[in-house]
Amino acid sequence: MAATAGLLVAALPASPEGVPGLLVAAWAAVTVLAAADAARRALRRPLPGWPRPALVLGLGLVLLAVPAGGAVAYESARDEAVEKMLLERLAKTDALAERAAGRAGFAAGKKEYTRAVEGYAGLAADHPERRAAKKVPAKLEALYESVATPYREDDHCEAIEPLTYLRELPDSVGEQALGKLATWPDKPLADALYTCGMDLVGQGQAGTGGDHLTALFEEFPESKEAGQVGPALLTEVSERSGALPDDACDNTSRLRALDALAGKLPGESVSGVSDKARSGVEKGTYSCGVEEFEDGKFSEAAETFTDFADTYKGNKNRDKARKAAIAAEIAEERPAAGRKLPPAKSPGGTRMELVVSNGGPGTVEILYTGPVTGRLTLKACAGCKAYDSVAAGKAGACKDKSTSYPKQRLSLPAGEYHFLYKRGSSTDTVRNHSSGARIEPGYTYTDCAYTVKGLGGLLPPPVDGAAWTPPPGTGRDR
Image (cartoon, rainbow, N blue to C red; front, side, top):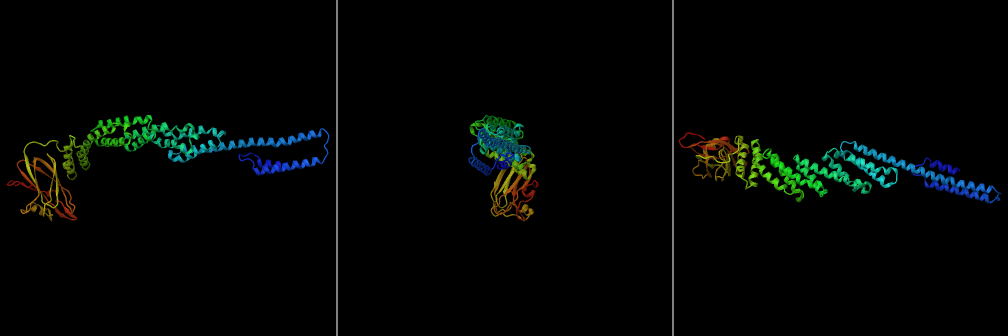
């Protein structure tokens, strides 16, 4: 009785861990010894008459039944303790999921979501028949709904990261623990990738949008959403091409991006997108150059027109683009040259002769624009040096009879002209120089390009650096 009392004190109340085995073994040993001692004493006495033997047998059975029944009752209590412990464990996991849902954005709660999923999965795997485990599927569904909140709120771009996270959970916790939830994210993720990708493409972010569409084809190549990409891109290309020449630079940039995007996607899925986009780019590039020119972005316009002329050699606007590129380059130095684009056709009527000569070291490229536009290059003048001053240049440039100055002749219609002189030099840097002049009927003109020494190297003269010579007897000083 003393041993049993001690066992009860140690065992109650029942806990999930049960009674230590050593304590149970000690109690059993004491009980066996007590029974042996009782048998020893009983055997030394004669067997009493009836009914005392029957009473002894009855008491013996009771003594055997009490610990057996107690063990059964204790095991039941211990089982309930285990259930309670697992329900508490489930409640703690629920608290993790709730904290994660309360965070500002999925990324902030990702670690807690992961711990909650692992807690649910572990509970279901370790104790599948327990009451707590039977509640896990509903708990996981609630967690999935929480993680997928951005998708339910139609924030498709925000939904991509959490849906991707849910889709990858089977790799870490196993499909068995997730059941039907293992494949649930597939459909919403495909929809999110498509919708977000096309939204970004429509906003002019074809690079980021294209990443999502590429992921769509990689993960769900046979999905309905993957089949919608090609028609949607064709529609986008048609809208951008149809909007030209309005917002030419923006629309052309987007068409280029769409062409690049189509090159990254499976060809059979986006058939015709690149061809249509490139046609729009050809049309839009020239219009973009015009737009930049009219907005005073002469550096960008010169580059755009030059690229157009070099790329689309068979386009009817190629010559116009070459002239516009020259005018834009001059306008960078002399904004007056950018008041309007060069005329498409040269004017008729009388033309005047302009003889341009190189009176300085190094080659010189001369760009001009006005009623006509063009460029020419003069070879280096052998023996020509830089002048010490502008005055010295005006007095001596191209006037040495013993020197052969490289020259070319131009026939120019009357009108206002703008010039840009670009001096090439192998030893020094020579700054570009621009100037303007009016060509009038009845005259011939000469122009001598020279350079003036300056600090840090050879510098071109100021506006009057081109020596314009008046016709004989006119008294006109150009």
